[in-house]
Length: 188
Image 1 (spheres, rainbow, N blue to C red):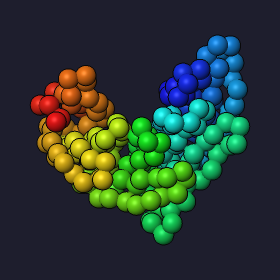
Image 2: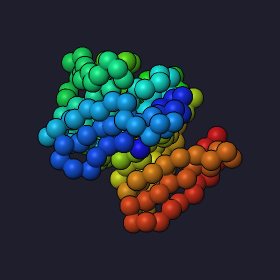
Image 3: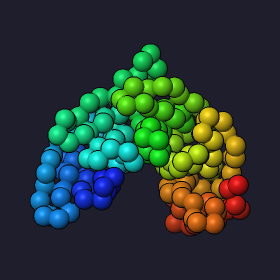
Image 4: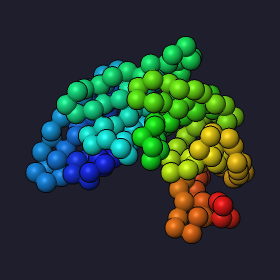
């Protein structure tokens, strides 16, 4: 599930082979828009932090951006290699960041890929963006990128990272594939 920027809508995705995205009005509990991805697997989705009713979807063979009422637009790779994306997140600036199955992140402006950067040795499982930095999690590692996309921290963990966030005390928290959690020292 992902809440829209204004908090008035919720996007859900079915867990079947049709990958039906539904945008719901929280006030009325009624669907305001639907989109069927069909046979292309959708692995993750997130809501834009700058636009209402705008969502990004990490898919097999690409990325899709869904804005109500305009509809779905496919990400433009601008010469970068087409990948299977496992994760997606949005920064507070509005840029989307996708994590590929081969460990690269792709940074998007609108629906166009600005650049790619290798970070993980395996799939990028989770992305969480903030104002001045971004956290990514993958196989045995959490990576912290600054706003210029330099790696400022590389934190080893004992398992695959499935969730990563930061609390109000700037402590990085991670949920791992084996069900364990880990807390790391202050980010800054």
